[in-house]
Length: 480
Ligand code: ADP
Image (tube, rainbow, N blue to C red; front, side, top):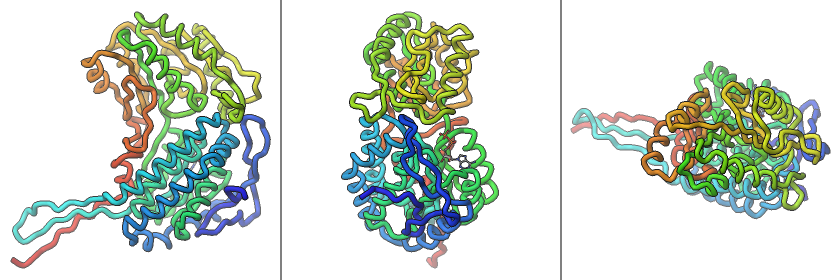
């Protein structure tokens, strides 16, 4: 039996669009239609908010332990279905199967972690300002949450938002990316099987994201919107949430610098750059978008790094050993091509790659460019593809200034063996996430999120559940 139904989940029921409309989900590696999924209208989506609102009081009234038991069952089911979920991820978004398995484990880890964290929501008892007063601050769930998610991590971006929301006692309406709704539907089906009460998780699928977004942000019963996606759409949602003053978490674009200082461990820096740059074919918001290398190590780094890049296997994610799958769609591929053409025209040189790959229409060769400078498009925009642009610098302050010269502030990385430099640079970089001597920073236990135009709020760790809680102050007068 299939792991999902190509419908939307509202109040525990699988439902189609009232018009009967569907949209196609495409395998980016082959161009084949994987599925036809219910294309809900904005009006159809209102029923999901009704359901989430109706389910909220009962779900919030459960004990944290009761909610944790259901979340834990959900975690077990996701883990048991790792292979089928990984295949679905690869089929609808293209990443290599090995990475898709990694995403299932990573995505499931949030369910596990927040099932436990929900039992550790504490308030405060504060020393009063008057003898006949007692002061409390309790934590309560914010209410109905709308979660709007992107295609690059079709499973993990959902669990990272939904698990803390549910653990806190909120109910949710998920709007997955129209490129990757199937994984979302599968995890929702597993939530049903785990015994999630009707209406606690709802999932609406549809092509008209702006109209659905209007409904979710325009309804005053939705008390929180949590979004991962482009900065452009994040700003629209920020404005739309203003009218009903919703709480908001935004995880938006990045322009991650990856700095290699002369005193770095070269092998470790190359390993880190490979993972950080080429995971998901470069389609993550924390992928290195600018590799800054100090002059003394520059040539050795370029040689060792490009040798590894040249050896990467580009193929359909389902092919054994594939390391680079297709880009998500034609727009994504066109952007990568334009960025590389622009850099080459302005004086950069391709050490390897620099052109599309013949594995299929949406594949692009892993590319290393040297001589990249600030005036090129890829210096200020996120390329979101398998392209590693290398900038040369001489001094530490120059690297910091270059790294901070962007409106984004999500992740930054640097490699050094010098302890004092570690702290100087860690503190000087204007980013929400700093990787020192590592290219992989994502984990369920740590607060993930950006500063500046990379967003608001944190996901993961103890901070992640705070985003779904309100603090209620109580001032209690007593007779002495
Ligand atoms: P990406 O480029 O990663 O697809 P987007 O910001 O376009 O990023 O999309 C992320 C999510 O936001 C997707 O689920 C998409 O359908 C949704 N989305 C796109 N435009 C809007 C909008 N105007 N309002 C609400 N959601 C939107």
